[in-house]
Amino acid sequence: MRMSFRWFGSQDDPISLPYIRQIPGVRDVVGALYDVPVGEVWPVDKIAVLKKHVHDAGLTLEVIESVNVHDDIKIGLSSRDRYIDNYRQTLRNLAEADISVICYNFMPVFDWLRTELWYRLPDGSETMQYDRSISEAITPDALLEQYASEASGLSLPGWEPERLADLRTLFAKYDGIDAGALRENLKYFLEAIMPVCEEVGITMAIHPDDPPHPLFGLPRVVSNRDDLRWIVDAVDSQNNGLTLCTGSLGANPANSVVDIIGEFAGEGRVPFAHIRNIRWEGEGRFYESAHLSSEGSLDMYDIVRTFHHAGFDGFIRPDHGRMIWGETGRPGYGLFDRALGASYLGGLWEAVDKGASA
Ligand SMILES: [Mn+2]
Image (tube, rainbow, N blue to C red):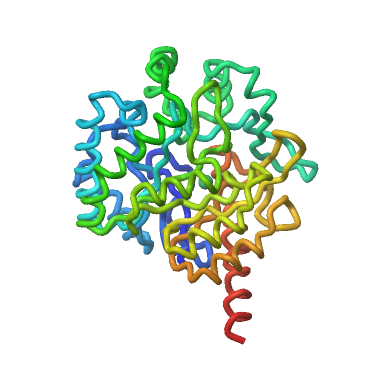
C-alpha cells in the first residue's frame, strides 16, 4: 500500500508540498494539470514541470486525478474520435513521465455533488453534506451559483466554470442518452484507449458516481457492484481498473463496500483507493465525517482489512476531510483533517499487517 495525498498545484492549492511531505507515511502526491481544457492534449513540458515540483519536494508523482473525459465522448457524438485521439496522446505523454495510474470518471455534466459545502457538526468542524430532497428541488444553475459564492474563491474539481458556462446547451446534448447508451459510450472509450494503456503501462481507474444515483435526469452507470462488474468485464484488461472510493459507494447503504472491495481488489482490478467515511443521516442524506469508524457509518477497520487480505498493493489516499482548527480553503481539501485521515489509515494498515503475520 502506498499512502498518497491529493494536491491541486502551486497556483491553486493553499497547501504547499513541503507541508504534505511532513505528513507521516505520505510519499506520493496525486496531481493533475488544471489549466488544460477538457479534451485537449496535456503537453509534455507542463507534465514535466509538475513532476519536477513534486520531486523537488521529496515526493513522487505516479497517480493523476483526473484526466477528465470530454462530454462528447460520454454522449457518443461523432466528434468523440478526435477527443479520444487527444486522450491517447495524453496517456503517452503521461507515461513518459512514469505515470502509472489515471483516475477518471464518466459522470455526465457534473462530477461529485453536495447540497451543503459548510455543514456544521456539533464539534464545531465544518464538512460537506448531501440531501437528495434538496438536490431534487434545486436547479443546476442555482447550485453552480451557490458553489461559486461559497468556495472561498478556489475552483472546485469537476465544477470548472468554463466547462459549465453553458449548462443548457450541455444538458440538451444529453437528450436521449439513457443508462444503456452511456454504458456503450464508456465501452467504446475504453476499447479505444486500452491498447495504448497496455503499451505504455498505464492503468485506468474509474471513479464511482458521487453520490451514486442519477441527478437532474442524467443517467449514471458507476454506482454499485453490478455497474462495476459490467465495466470490468466489458473490457477485460488488467489496465481497465477502478478507483475504489468508499465514501461514494458507501453513500448508498445498499452497497456493501467491503464485499465490493473483496471482489474487485481480489481480482487485482483496484490500483487506487479513496478511503473516507460518511455518516448516514436518514433516507438520501449523509455528511462526510472524520475518517474514524466511530465517527461515521462505515467500518474502516473492516475496509482496510479487506484491502489487505486481497493483497492490495496500489495507492490509497484519505479522500475528503472536514475543515478543522480554523483552517480555511477548498471544501473537503484542507490539510489537517486529511492528514489525520492518512495517519489513521496508516495505523489501521500497520495493525492489520502485523496481525496477519503474527
Ligand atoms: Mn473519491
